[in-house]
Amino acid sequence: MAPALVKLALRRALREVRYVRPVPFGRATGLVRDVYGRLERDFGMLAPPVALHSPSPDVLAASWVMLRESLVASGETSRADREVVATLVSRENSCPYCVEVHGMALDSLGRSSVASAIAEGRSVADPRAGTLSPGARAELTAVAFAFHYLNRMVSVFLGASPLPSSVPDSARAKAKAVLGRFLRPVEGAPPGDSLDLLPGGSGDFVWAVGNPVVADAFSRASTAFGALAVSSAVREVVERELSTWDGSPPGLSRSWVDSFDDPGVRLALVVAKAPYQVDDALVAAAGLGDRELVELVGWAGFTAAARAVSVASPRGR
Image 1 (cartoon, helix red, strand yellow):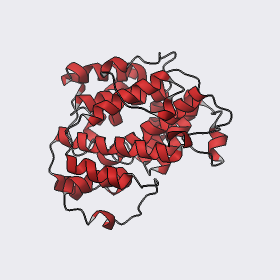
Image 2 (cartoon, helix red, strand yellow):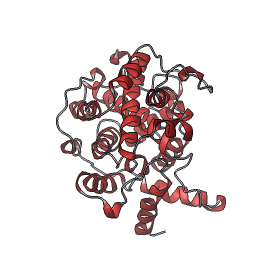
Image 3 (cartoon, one colour):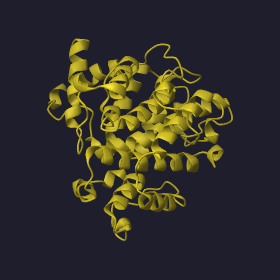
């Protein structure tokens, strides 16, 4: 299949997004168009997990800044190393879409030098802490953070597979092979190239001290999420509930949020702790427009990702 046709098909895959209507590529303007262009240039495709944020341009930019500066930009660790972390975090968060995508990427990249260390049970956020440099630890922790965030967005807004439901079973293996080739890294993607998409931030990420570009990227993203119009009631409850959370999933039942009357609080808490439990009824009860829904889910996802990384990494405590 010709690259141009694959790109067109991937743009059309935005139709698979649930609950909100992403901005089509041909109608994008301003910041959205800028991010879309960079996403196709540096990631190889208009990836739905990023493009689904487009109803809120600032959240779109923040999601791309985190993904690009953690997974895509060149650094001390290899892309294969980072894809291992992305895959394992996605498994931990029960996100089959992301597991499939990054499994395909690994198939096209080859063996990772840290895969065996992580597989032996060492922390995803701090693999081989005794042998990795501070810069390498920062890069891999940034990937873990980005995917704790993206897994939550994907669980809410996308299905179980990156391949459209219209692709027949007999063609899925070939389609995965084609998509995997598009996920091969862009050679020499310079660190920091996305930072101009967001104003400077004031966040302080202890785990990122070994990599100033990563620290700057996540600080800018943190400031963008902090400025969103999320109600104080939602912020207070979610931050309180996460302050003692150890990262463990609450289980299959959703009874743990039944005591909260505010539907926005319930949705934000489920996104934060158990995004696989989000369903049509929970989203409908919140009664939010496209931009407001992306921003509420995004804020809850970012807040939970920050907590997950702080729990996993001794350097983040």
